[in-house]
Image (cartoon, rainbow, N blue to C red; front, side):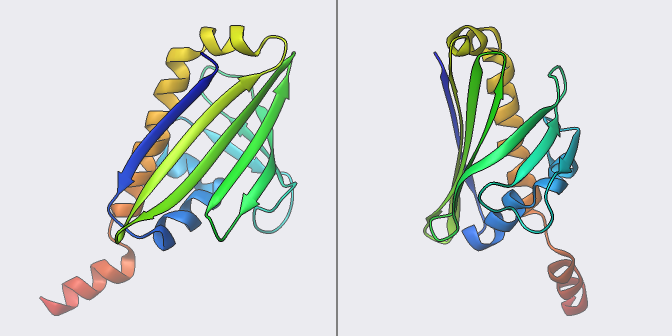
Length: 153
């Protein structure tokens, strides 16, 4: 198996989830699958943007955005190493007033299938951590909501 996919429902609108997902510099704040992020380009995440990511038990990897569709709320980025190409895809869809987030990884290349098998459990673990961390971050009250609720009490 060279494909991994995790789907999660988040009880806030896609307009709340999408900016959190695109703000990759802050991922270490909400997912334990990422320990450090270094953007290699200035400005917002755009097609061609590169980001170095450190993850537990893995070597640092440079990910380059290979597709970005703001309207459909999808972005994918790719990393290459030692005969392996990995594409990570992130999608946020509306489900009523809530969101469905799909996170996926696809391994290809000469050693892709072998490495996918070796890292199978780690991939499932990291996709789950990212999804659950994103849900926790997005469903948490924002400072404005919290202060507004306190003011009404």
